[in-house]
Length: 143
Image 1 (cartoon, rainbow, N blue to C red):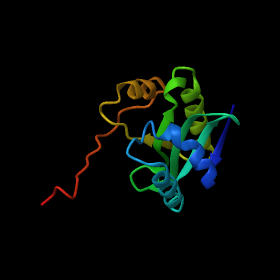
Image 2: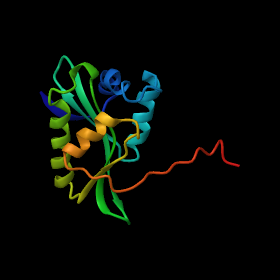
Image 3: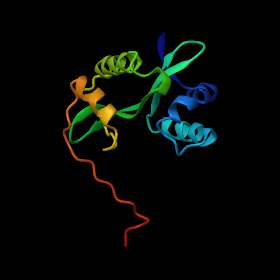
């Protein structure tokens, strides 16, 4: 099992089946195009797996923020549904912690949907804290 940052279209396509379990609204071509666009904005996609299978993925970016300093923001973190509770997510999470520290980050952040109770247990077990409320506004509905 290795963890690598994937960078090519073929690698993104290989990751799609697992990412689609988290981002169910995306078709494969949309996913590839969106990842390529977000790469220009600092997005990186880390993959845990082997030559036969993608087991877990993390989309993240390193950024400097006025409010926090240099941080890693995790956009996406998912393990293949039929491979959960086998330590793959933990292994990838630990890699993210080490990678963030090596990049000079002082914190890691992520948002998680309020309904994702299993994910919240996973994050809390790894000493992450619920430190803020995230608010959103659909601009199509705002008048």
